[in-house]
Image 1 (cartoon, rainbow, N blue to C red):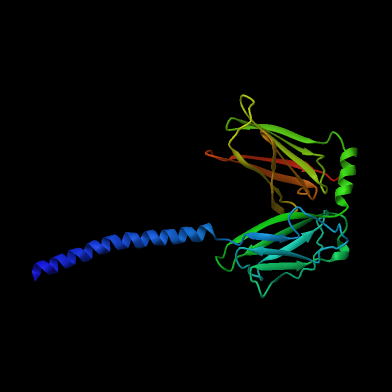
Image 2 (image 1 turned 120 degrees about the vertical axis):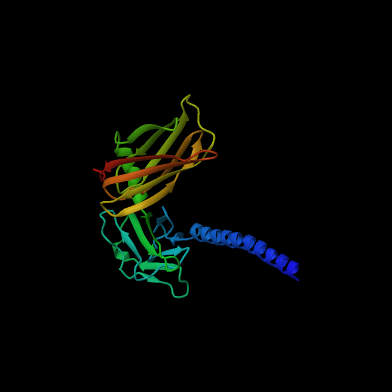
Length: 268
């Protein structure tokens, strides 16, 4: 009997020694999964990001953002501003009672003139208590036509700069480099021998204007050739100082990160 009791105790100790680390591991995995999927991040925008509206004569009456988690209505917001940083929304932020991840605000449509508008949002998640914020832009039609005319008349105002990050040459250009219109953004990448890198996945530009309280506004550039990436949009919606972070994501290598600042003015 004593021998069997000793064996039972030994089995119990062995089982506990296995189960405790296993339980700790499962808890860590659970916490890791929560961290991966935490925060209220937007999953869709209406009007869509960098879209043109009003071409059919119909203007949006609301801005709607759907999040990955439930925003707390008492601590979250959506603001819609024009190129003069004036609000054009009705300050009636609300969360859809039928979909607690969807929030919206009404637009004062008579204030929507042709031009670029910035939607700034902040969400306090009711699910994990974290705060996220960001911005995006959309254009009311006819602004694109005005921009095209402006590009022909506005010359010699491009913003061009170059740098070297981790042995990669980066040249970037913004044209026509005026606020409140659609600008073109181009990034050229090459190694020290002048050859285009082959391991680039994506190139992002993230814009912020602290003075106007705008951003971060993220733009993913499109590959147009070997080592060439470009995009266009009204991301620089207002004059003043803008901070830009460039992120070049690569396969089997660390991201390339470069930040720069500039002042931009409205068209003359």
